[in-house]
Length: 260
Ligand SMILES: [Zn+2]
Image 1 (tube, rainbow, N blue to C red):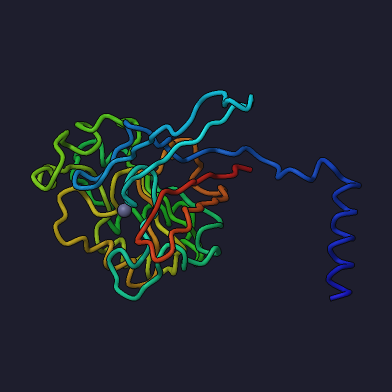
Image 2 (image 1 turned 90 degrees about the horizontal axis):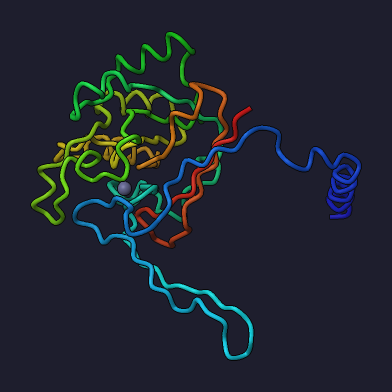
């Protein structure tokens, strides 16, 4: 205990001597869409609602602002906890921080996705990236850029339909991963997988095989990740912290990257 105290004191002293080191060097990029009435949710999910409780000066003389909010777990920039498609696997609050914070790579399939809204990221896409940058290391957060972010929040172009409810689901068209690519990511023991579309499975999926494969291995998913065009293929450091919903199957995610 005493030695721990000494370490803490010497660390604090170090900070005082070198105040410029107090802030992490680099540029922070916010990969999160704001939550408001335009935020895109799954057609069957309850969208984000904000109710103003107070936004005024009180009789006591001070200003007071407060709101209530409600939303489905799965909408906007959010996390899928493994339990979402794998019974007994991690809930939102159980995902280790070590899987949510760490080095990230970006695999850009924009050109291929551009020619088909039903594009599925293949093993070939992974192989191409690994040929250029080396094998994806264990513990990496792997982000897929399809270019779909440029369509946000236009529901017709982003989801493939403006309808809501169960009838809209067969009309969903957006890119996702092929199950073979998901299997390779499990092989590589990655920490998490993210994408700039509404789902890691493509819009036309009816069995959600990518969700099933990754989540069985306790690898969480990040969906509707914003601004992936601002990230390099390698070198970004990611922090992706969801609301800590106990027993949650997902939740709103604040995801940011530090660029060197
Ligand atoms: Zn989700």
